[in-house]
Image (cartoon, rainbow, N blue to C red; front, side, top):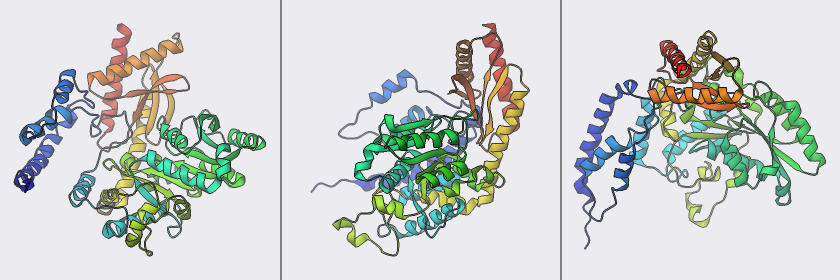
Length: 474
């Protein structure tokens, strides 16, 4: 009889786990001394490619050393306090603890029967989030997903199935901003909406959807015998942190009998803010909301939520009970497989539940407020710095600015700002990348790390000025 000795590794692995945690925290303080991002060199790539899978396996010590030295050092370090390039915030340690529980117990959170404990937590967490969004928690519901991409996809499926008959699908029209996240475009393609029926509505000088243009476009499409069925707004655009005019868009959708989805992957977390919730006025009128906990609720990948005002809209699209699932169905509880595309899945809710229960919403809300105020402080510093020009003001903790000098063409300015971003990141003091706004290459800073101080901001802007001087000299 074949006997695979799995148990011979158990004690060794327990020791490795304990040692890893100790070593990780010993080295954590060194993170701020390193670069915000480190790219893998070619010789390391080749070494990893040459580490082939063998019949007899490899020594565990050498494999773990390889992970520590040749894999994980080469990444975007979100924990670095001067990493301003990306939205995902540093992860609170308690979220990692939740991940640890989830990994070890490994429940299948597909439904109530397979993991009734985590199902109860998920039901209560979702009811709380829906209430924070202004929904009736008894009627509303939602599901935990891998990220905003899947949340946007599930929302657009629900909207399509509610508003479009089979014959109408070829006439369905969608309205998005030219600042919408690329995942929205992908979701629309998946549900059968081609480019020619996706309207990228003009934005105003603040990069918000123009409601007047939107309504005119909808009326034109209706005159042409098309079927407008969904407007996708954004609460916290990736480029500039912009929140679209939600009350006005909700009014239009109600008048035109359309679904309003708010992609709040980033900005919906402002719902927990102590003093900035007014920025999201109108979100309670949306039919659905995307909300990523791994963006601004300080959770590890992956943890996102789709909230819907009426759970019936999800059940219409996703509820089905094949024969092999009948015994696992529970009438008292809605199984998560009936609320989205996923069947087998991890209990992503655990780490968020643990974090919010332990830290409390005030601490999380205050941290979100701190990020917003830090962006406003950064704006004030930039405005007082020669040769830097604000392009979009601080909004939901994102600021865009650029190097500017009279006499240079837009092409020359764009090339200079690209070179400036490369120099800043290559020198390793801070990471600031560029984006494109209205044809301009700009520097974009996200100030959502609670570790970042005003002193860090001051020194970063000083560093930018030093880089400008070097580039101008050369």
